Image 1 (cartoon, rainbow, N blue to C red):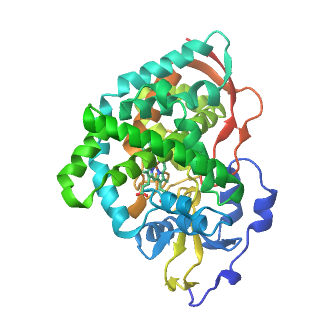
Image 2: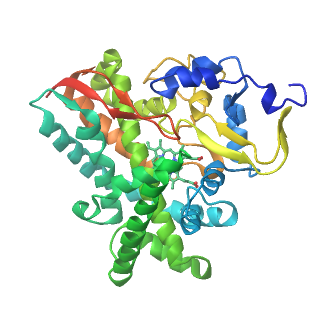
Length: 403
Ligand code: HEM
């Protein structure tokens, strides 16, 4: 590419985005195909797999959400500080340190033991709607599962932590950058902080077999560098990062299948395809459809000038449809073989640390649902949330026959 392309030289998609409705992955690929970079309001949008990978692996691309939240009007500075200390928003040395502390506690073997319980919960959820033959899948299947799972992982009774979903939703809504989301997010942060602080105190006195006990042990082994506040930061980040995403991604999966009865029947016939189906759903229709970054210094991306402070959108939806990486990218194919990882769980410096748990939850849910539900079909209009940083159905009416 020739040198010195500026933001203002780029094709703007503002007007087309304003006219678009429904999930971003249905219209974004069409709006941007043929363009390597486009402009969306004041942001540069990266559309290719290779460019997205560079931005997610290069430390000069800072955390765009962090910059955005700090710049919101009328926001309490103490709240900004607290939110910035979330793993999802943290940067630099502290971010690396917290990630290093959290990752060993999120190993596959720590979650395998929850798989039978995950399957059982989904089975029970199906039992509740089996006779009706129809339901809103968001309410009946997708919302309940991740909260149950995070409660097992943290070793707390579900009734005690019923508010996790609400807290996660209010916190992720803030990532949209919309100032009207601030007061709910502030209240949610206070609520979750005091709950987790109390929980850490309980585990210190009475260790259990759960993630908090594992993290406290890891923190102690790490000695001087890890504090109780760090452990609290990690746990809150796992609740916020793992609840809204998983329930939205499961709802999206069901929407994809309800629109494609032949793929649902294929999954029913061949349950061994479940892991590949999970990957295909997260590639084809990622709930985390965009990742926000900001140029932390003046830089150039193969001829495109990015002055310091330029917001950059790493569009995972588009990277996942890059035909040089994924042949026939607009085809939803649960038998797809992946030569390269998709970006639905991010990539590089901030990639999803809960992806093992998420894959287990989605896998168990699809295994049970495909075994129990035949003739899955849409049963009315799907209502979609706004495309902020994550997107998914708010309402997903489905019909089926339960077996
Ligand atoms: C289907 C479900 C999920 C999806 C699609 C998803 C997607 C993502 C993506 C795309 C990122 C990268 C964000 C960025 O680069 O800006 C991310 C980060 C993260 N995810 Fe997930 N996630 C899911 C489930 C989970 C679960 C279950 C947990 C916790 C148990 C979790 C915890 C986190 C955390 C803490 C981060 C921040 C990592 C960091 O900044 O270093 N996620 N996730």
